[in-house]
Length: 256
Length: 281
Image 1 (cartoon, rainbow over the protein chains, first blue to last red):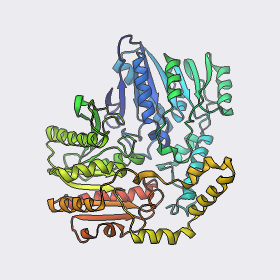
Image 2 (image 1 turned 45 degrees about the horizontal axis):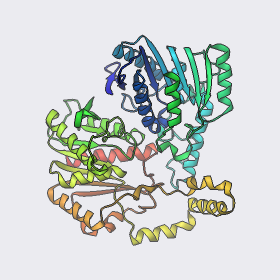
Image 3 (image 1 turned 45 degrees about the vertical axis):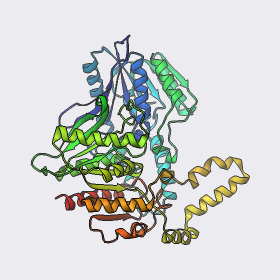
Image 4 (image 1 turned 30 degrees about the vertical axis):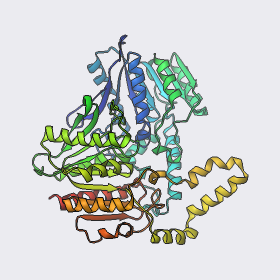
């Protein structure tokens, strides 16, 4: 794998390219789209593993950090969905440039799935891995975890404040919060993808709603339940690495 | 400030990011700070704290390398049979050598956080190139005052009673059992193999005699309060180090183990930056 900075010199983004391993290279690049900052750390290892699995199947794979996250430029309070969507497009271009591929597929996890779906990219395959369908529900899930953490922390530093200025250790500026609250894949324009797979570990009604909604508006939309540890975090699991072997295999098989 | 990919080690398989100050503010001859993984997480530190620290330090003239130990984060595994700590020590030594070869760095500050203290400590006690060490949530031992505070506070602890009742109910109600870990868990950060207290005191004394400046940081909030619960605990653990001018200790009573709250993290980073400016002007 080859780490690099890409994009503008004023705000370089960090990415890692995984070239195909062995014979049988494909003319397809796969872009991996991380979840939001709160869930990023626990999924880093799973993304590295997924990238390696896809590289072994002959794909060119690229994973990258959004602006204001990971090793990319920007402070943690500067991230916005609109910027991150632009980052997805920049990463796709970087992958095309590095690998000289004509086709791009994308795999997005949680908020990353929503970003990939709304990026406007023309994709061969789009895998929505336990996607954030409704931004309000997503924020509510994270806020619930935060409330639990506060409850057991004897000294919450901002206990007296009405609204914490942050969410699970990361700034949540109003502009970003507004963007996330306004996110709803049921109402967004359908992704431009030849095939769309919704892949989930937990059978929740909202995922079926998304399946029905996309199936009405796009061709080749499939739903896959892979029972396993859910990506949707609970409490301290945000600090524990996500492994998801069955899901990683299912995704790699889906693309391969 | 500029950042660059830094690959080094066997086959160039270890991946890091070197953050360097603008030449106008750079401090020639200042030590380079080196940090690696905290637990199994990759090199950016809890809540991206190493990225923020590196950029803050660059603004005042210091360089910092954050990297993934071999086999973790974005780094490949070493193809040898060394044990985990031995591999980590080799990785840190490779990092220092790469910084010397490519950037001319001769002096280093080791930064360890939680289990990351193990390799930082092991390298700091042996390597004369290490002139400073920052140990965050590192080795800690209970003292009589620790136990006294712990048991005296317990009846007023909401978390204790919450855990107590959950455990009691779970004995009779199987459906409650999945909730026990969350409510009553003790993070097993202090269960790894520790040097003895006497050995640590000897190590710290020897490092101070060698001219190594040390900053010890502890927190007393969630995830830490089972091991640290008062500001003077360090010197009660190591009474012979009391008055040693090369040692500074900071206790963040309210911060949790990984400094989750932004306000706590900002104080931590400011403390480190101030310590660097004082000891390596």
